[in-house]
Image (cartoon, rainbow, N blue to C red; front, side, top):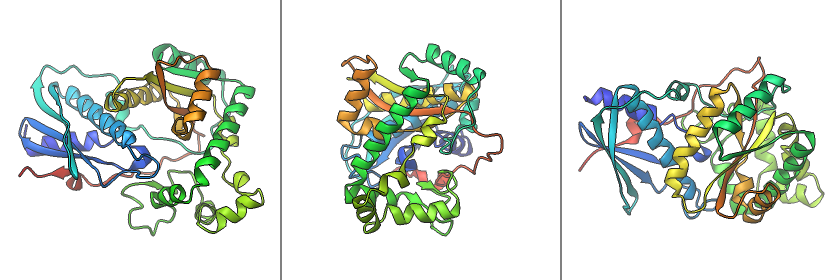
Length: 331
């Protein structure tokens, strides 16, 4: 493969979901047949994810994206897992081989995107699609019905308030939010206002509400939770899916599966919005698993609210770092 081919592969791999769109995956081109995946350990949620588990999921998703892109061109790969250290930590080495078989999910990598606004009213076709997803993805436990969605919406708001009351967590969250098009990284990484389905006024308000002075003051008089509440958007969904995997599964492998599950939801014609705080707060995750009969041999990875985008919605351009910044030159 030539340099242009490998660059195209890396661009395809970087279409994979990345937690908070941090994009920690880097690619070292060792030769025309070998690519090493590395983690840029400076790009991590040091407060929200101190152990780097979300980064490992993001690396796994990027790896799966690379495998899908290779297979689309008739290639496979021999894979060597690595346990590196340092600022650029080696994670996996891919030696490109022949014999790949195209995957039906690969075309969906070009259009996959989260949707963070309120969904269109669910139809019977949407509910049928959810039933098909549940059959295809046994690691999704799907909740439907007004009462179930109202309950999980309340749990989500309570969990969000629990983490947002920590000033360091709020500051870190804001550092990855791009609330104004004037932000230098608005089109590069993080969560920008367009992708969060926020109007300019809503984006400005979010920055104020989550600020170091306003949030405690609003919280003290009971106004913070109504202002950050997502329960209405949860209630608009066709369903909420709890994504669970074996407890002992490495986070890298969980990330690979995470990407494929997301693509299955896209293939069903539906969109999703991650509700990661439900898994990030241990007692909340345990409660949801217990309430829904998910065994202790499983871990709650995340939750999604799933539905159909309104017909008037226009998907913003993908927010990604340029490929040139993802490639690490071999020493």
